[in-house]
Image (tube, rainbow, N blue to C red; front, side):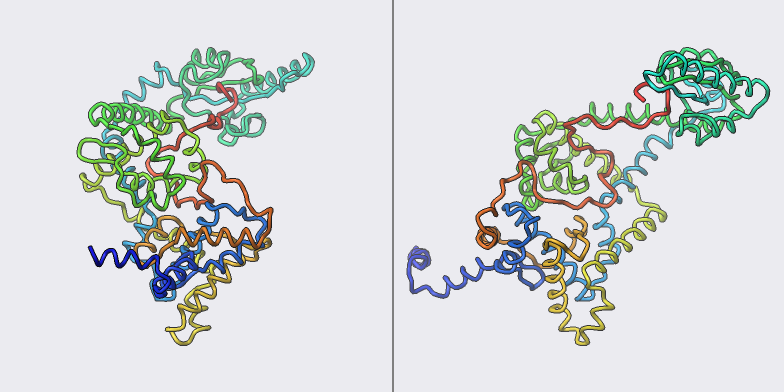
Length: 497
C-alpha cells in the first residue's frame, strides 16, 4: 500500500520530472507505426492549410489511420517483406476467399443435387408456366398523337409481313427492334414466367404454340411481335435456365430449413453496439462483445466489424441511420453467413486452383499499384538507398511526402487507402498505435492554425472515408436498406420496366 501511494503521489509532485516528460512526449505523438512517428505538429501543420479537409475529430482520427496504413505498407517493403506469401494473400483477400468457399459449398449442397431430365425439359417447355420468347418492339412514346401511333403500328405490321414471308426473326430484331437489350441477342427475352410481363403481352405470349409468331400486340410500350421458338432451337439454353429455377427453389428451401433448424438469438443490445461500432470501427474489431448466439457458436462485435469492412462505404451511413429492427436482421444475416462458412469448413471445402490463380493475379496487381503510388517500390529504394539500414528512414520520408501532398488543396498524387484486410495483416505483423490524446491535441492545434472558421460539425453516423474491400461483401450478406434499391434493368415490356 505504501508503494502504491508513493506512485500516486508522484503525479502531484513537481519533482517527478521524468514522468512528466514521458507523458508530455506521449501527448506530442499522434501515431506510431513500425518505429516511425506522426507528431502532433506534423499532423496539425498538414491539416491546417487543407481547407478541403473538415477539422472534425473523426476526420483527424481517420487521417491518422491512413498514415498508419501507408507507413506500415512502406516499412514492410523496406524490410524486404514481399507480402506475397500464401497466408498473407488469403488473409488480405478474405472476402474473395469466403465467397469462393460459400459458392463451392452451395454447389455441393444444392446445385450439384439438381438434375433436370430431358423429359422434364420437354414437359416444362410444352405445358408449363414458363416460356422462351423473342420479340420485336416498335416503341411509342407516352403522349404520342393518334397519327404517330398509327404510323408505328403500320411499321410493326410491315415487319410482321416480312416475317410471314420468311424473313429471319433474329436478324430483323437486331436491325429493327427498339428494345436495345433484347435486340443485341436477336430479340431474345429468354425464359419468361407467367405474369412477369405486362398483361397484353403476357396474355398473347402464353397462347402461342412452339414455332408460332403472334400478330402485332399493343402494350403501354408500343407494338410487339412475339415469337415462341421450337424447343430444338433453344433446348440447351432453356434447360440451363430451368435448372437455375430449380436451384433457386432449393436455395429457398435450404435457407428456410436453416432458419428453422439453426435458431439465431440476437441480443437486445446488438443494435446499439453496432451503431457504436460505426463511430469506432478500430476498437470494434477488437471487441469480444457477443451480439448473437446459435448452436455451436456465437457472433461477436469484432467479427461483425470484420464483415462490415467488406461492404461499400455507404454501409457506414446506413448502419448509423437504421432502426433497431433492421439492425437485428442485419446481425442475423451475418450470423447466418458465419454458420455457412463454418459448415463449409466442416465439409473440408477448398478453393479450386482457378480460384487461387484469380485471387493471386488480382492481388499482385493491386499491391504493386499501391506500392507504386506510395513511391516505395523496391527498385526505387535500391537506387536511392545503397545501405539497407537507411531504407526505413527513406520510406518514412516518402510516406510523409505522400501524406503531406494528399491532404493538400491540390494534391499531385492520387489518393488510395491500403485495402482493409491487407491493413489488418500489416497491423497484426508490425507494431503500431494511435493516441486519442494525440488526436485531440492535433485537432486543437490545427484549428488554432487555421483560424476561427476551422471547426466543422460532426457528421452523424460516419467514421470518415473508407476503402472498398476487394471483391465486395461475400455470400450475399446485405447492409440495411433505408431507401428503395434501384430497379434492375428488364427487357422492354416487362412489368416495371
